[in-house]
Image (cartoon, rainbow, N blue to C red):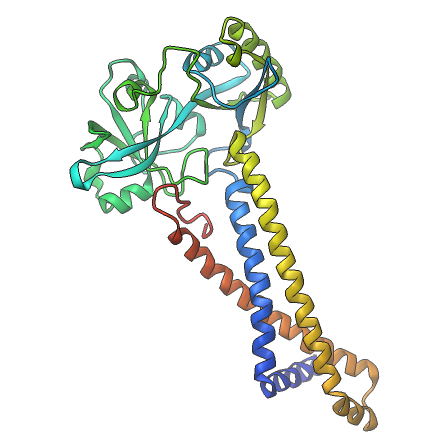
Length: 373
């Protein structure tokens, strides 16, 4: 231990004697390590990290293979209703459609990201409200008074975390809507890449989003998420859902007929969004790893050049009796200390970038705190 401490003190003195070299090496390593860590953190937030819901491993996203070979990732409301009622392999099946809403009125109105969801949406996902309540069956029936659940970030940003917002009336797309609850912090629905501001029941679609229809199989705009029943595997669920889908879609329009259902684990992105994100993520991670490799090679070259410049010092230490093993250990200690400082600087850089990136994207569609969580 005494020898190790002596090597560390000597390495520290050597680094202080060459501050330019030390700063250049640490900065180079920090860029490579910090950039790679940031990119992996983003990929983890969007693709790998489980959703902040109850037992996320039991959630599946529903997709289908069409009869003409196309992939079907969005469904009509009648498709959802038939699939929900026709199988017992799921303990719950919910549907949602992404929408943009004008929140407020007049000059105070802002465009927000939201979703129209089935009444059992929050129950199937297994989340609890931060304030108020979530939807009840009476909220999702034709003719019901429009209600809404606000996202935590929207509540903080737009309403100043005022608890009296629950029970008040806001305006969505110019229509009065009663706020019944606030979603928990960090919950953005089933798509991590979006910072969801508001959820409204599907029954409010004719009033708030009249372009989305609930009465026809031709209009396919809903995505579906299910929760597996206890003891049911994904393979068994796929088989049962496929049988049911073939039954009710046999009379659907050609583009909506389903040959087989695919039940994929829910990981924060669905359908084509996940496919696209995987491609972009692979490219970004490959680029980051190449930058790290280049940084490592550059620092290795700098160390070799520095070692060559210290030949006289090495010769003198050999002449006065220092062993080759001791010299090699000293060089390794200096390299390890340099890489440790570079790694610490990289962690600081990654933390700073994690705070900076969410602030650089617009409020709508942001990933609030995704890199910090």
